[in-house]
Image (tube, rainbow, N blue to C red; front, side, top):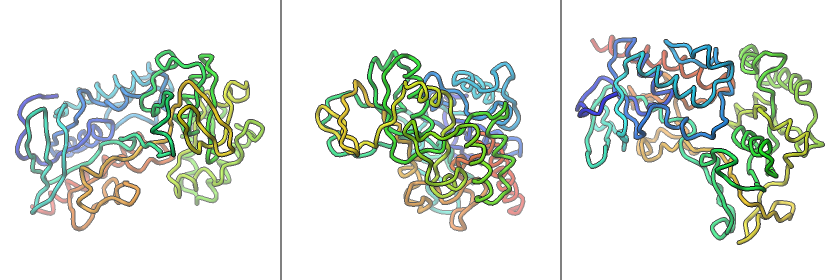
Length: 388
């Protein structure tokens, strides 16, 4: 990692020093393409450093390593947040990647026959020209906040899940967690295990699955089903779900409106991997309540008219990709802000522009990053060879 002056031109620029950016840079280097990685943060994997304390990978260690370096066995089957950070720092060092931290990418443009990445570092401003640009800023980049009526006038404590760390720092005895996705479910369990009274607001019932079934990681089971049609995947996953999870209607969670695979493919909603929520629900330590409807200055009003007066509200309402300021002017984003392309796919008007890490597959995001990083490197070297 270097704080030296940025070069005016390089073969490739990778934007983002998280798992996706590191994998892309390592695979490009392996293919003989020099890449400079830039990131506004002060460390690699900075988004991981900002997650709540109890977070572990929801995918198995052996299926989560990046290309060219396995995650150490000593980190256990489900790797803790701080060990993920250690692994990413080790990955960058082992591959001797050219990473420039504290450098913010401002825009990506193609005025002529090369890409131009505008950047800033403190008071410095500059532009790097490159033949290849890999955008890898992260799937969960910017907190998404719902605009409920009255939220701005609410006098209680409200924070997004990205700002939550642990029960002690939150310092609340009665908490409403909004959203039953992976962050919301785990935060609810974390609080309940600390003796906090927890309500979990649910609008759309989630597909809850065990992290492992009979000792087999759910990720491995899903991988075995991946070649099948969505309907068959839903049927098999649903059968496992009924056996391993059971009927949750008695605890306030009816059956999800779509099967696990279809919900992911059509709604971009991943299943909620259980790491404590089911135990807390069945013990009565987490109570499922209706969706939030609005806020008053001193209460949270639910869709069924119930008023709650929690000490704190944690909004586990998801994230946006946050790419609009970077590439919004290129017309490469869908209406929901997700790139129109991913991995080695390229738009005809924009050769050499790649997006990595925006697919969020059921089979595991980190695993897919490695596969897609190799594809990007192969596509880049193929273009170089055809231009010779």
